[in-house]
Image (tube, rainbow, N blue to C red; front, side, top):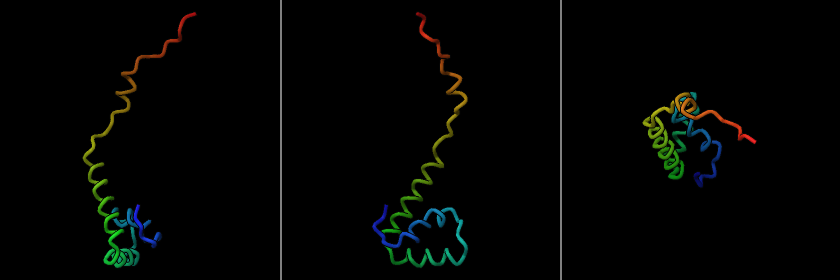
Length: 76
């Protein structure tokens, strides 16, 4: 996390990245970002993680589950 003492704005960084802020709130967060290196770095990190996750292939859970052999209780 960031060392920024303004936790309210810091907590809105994911919402800024995903374009979920009202125009007024967006301006407030962007104004804060213009003077806060910590939050700028945090936003860059969030953006990089988002890009990485978008490039990650989806997992076929059903195929994985189907490949697991059925459980057989040990015989006594």
